[in-house]
Length: 98
Image: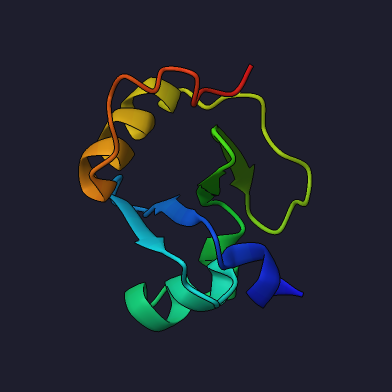
């Protein structure tokens, strides 16, 4: 269930304009959060990079694909933006996908 999956984590997404947005402990699935807060429709969601930070790792997805992406072109940049947005320590370099 999405509520249990999202509860203890930070979720994030890269919007079509390149802006990185994040939220903490939001019970909504990514698609619902982005639709309600940022007016991202289902068609546009298919192309968005999004993911979560939990258990000392960062995971990226694209669209509704349930298989995590290894990296994105902006992995390091997104990680640094997320750390700043969420007030996380930038020393946590282990939060990169392998």
